[in-house]
Image (cartoon, rainbow, N blue to C red):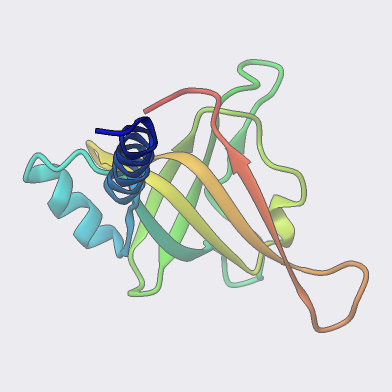
Amino acid sequence: MKTSHIIGIVVIAIAISMIIVAAGDASQYVSFDEAFAKAENGNSQKVHVVGKLKKDSNGKYTGMEYRPHIDPNLFKFILVDNKGNAVKVTYHSPKPNDFERAEQVVVVGKAQGNEFVASKILMKCPSKYEDGKVETIEAESKKKI
């Protein structure tokens, strides 16, 4: 067998293994109900949940807990998914900048107990530079789950 054939086979094998790893790491968009059902069934795969921050009748955010003087790497908030389920989300990193500006929030992580532990937060915020445009901001947790 020629050296060029061996190199070609190795390159193809590396490409296939990269595709398999990427596909195995991909998570899916679900509701909180589905995320908790997956956790109860022993599925440890990360999922995406889309929602909005919980507000009271006056339009103020409720359930947000961030005390940087006590623990700067602990941020908790309540997210209401697209089906109306409100769940407490724990994020083991500082609160992302402009978090309150987010029109929509996507949390990536796993359901644990009665809360959702996020490893990544994606926020869709109105652009401060152009009217009508939406800006996506991503924050990743320092703690691996």
